[in-house]
Image (cartoon, rainbow, N blue to C red):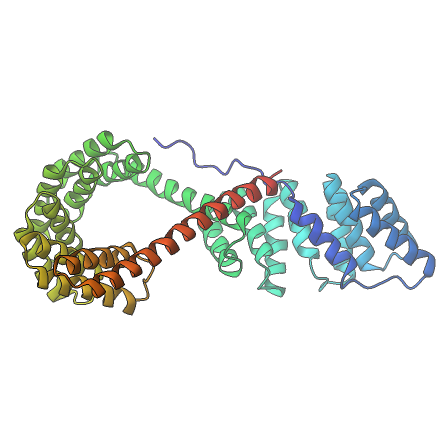
Length: 402
């Protein structure tokens, strides 16, 4: 139904790797003792830096011939061979370096990368696991372990591994890409098993509805929600999901009906009560909304959103003082919860500015309006920055996979 679940994208050695290789080669690695050999070793590093991999490999081969027990020489030779695509030779060089120095930093990682690129996933996983054991804070090692696990078809393990990588390096675009892929595959595998277990299950229709919502195919989402409800009409959450789709289409009467149906099944649902209140306000039923929101606030006393919507309801009813009280409470609760960049806080200040002006309280109205304008400017600046960051990440992701 959803097709075969595979991880078809082969991740080539990206630019970060070549830079890391040079850092490893030029930084903490030991130096040859012989002056002539050291000169050749340095020339090999310089050739690597300049992208002259053939010269680098030849230089490192001369180094290892002169000093066959020099682990770092074998390691650097492996790096050059790996980037040239000579995978079997690279694997041999990395293995020699590890026999000579089992704790050589990075050797297991790049051995694993070479094995991965050679489609030898079990050995790749074993090698990279050794690297993560000795260097557990190396986010790239965890990433490559996850990539190898994905290639081996173990999306469950890969998703957990890539979660660890993301925790160590939250803004790394390569890690975020592979982590997203892993979780998508876990979801697909779960849905595939669900469909095979019971293709007529209401859950299948629920999943299809959610998928159609994500694709903005709302009419099809509504149909699948209705099919799910036909099979499981008393399931908590289904009517609310259907109401959400109607709300996206601005079909307020239908949304109102579904949120009511949800509350008939699950009277304790705070989200359904809140959504019904909001729809009631949009349908000019402030008395209904007010009753719902007052009940909600008795159960969720610190809800800034509920105070904001109750302020709207009281304003529609003409209860200006009550409206001001609840908009002020929305401001307080937003600040207390640390959500000072929320739309609820901004709009509460805007509503207060309008209501104070109606009461001819000029200073209060001016102060509220100034707060609204300040927060709006901050929000606009943050949105512009997020857009720039998104474009930058997109460009980085394209570079990383070239």
